[in-house]
Image (cartoon, rainbow, N blue to C red; front, side, top):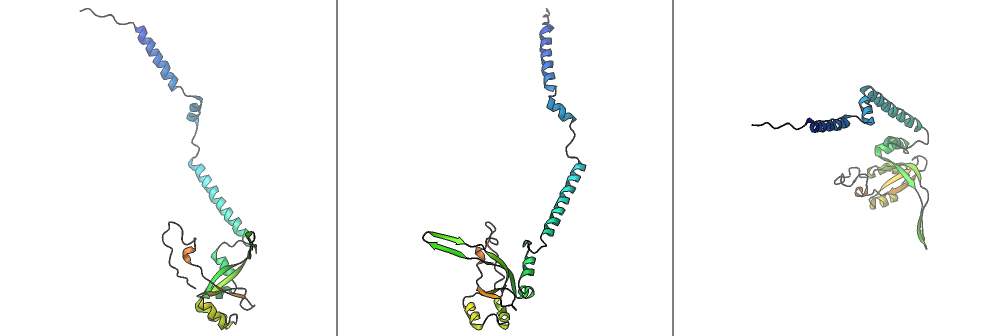
Length: 199
């Protein structure tokens, strides 16, 4: 049997050279890839610890500045405790009622053209007394028996502004329905909690 002659190696050499050039071109790093090989990790454990310390220090400084700025007479009302402290007759109010913010405003309604105009409100510390403790107001003679009867018939209670010893402004106030309080009845949170603080 006669052997076939081998095909010339030139064609194979050409193909091999072409593949080598192709492989070399794909393996050769681009300028961006060269940088990534020499690039060190951006966040080491030390830098993370330093950034965490700066973050915690910033929070501490922010709290310190805000609490220092809230100590003056024009400070922001930021908690229930500050409202309790500023209420008229604070100890009596907390024991027999609840401290409150009384908002006084005037609304002017014109009919031709129909518009409503609201004056700037004034906010003052106030107190709402539970109806079981109305005797305190009667003893101090800031309400009389007619006012008590009238307020009880409307199922309301009393709120006042100013110290009880210095002729306070006492009003018969109405407690709104908790179902309309959107702070308590959040959408999707289920049924509102039952009212335990009926006045």
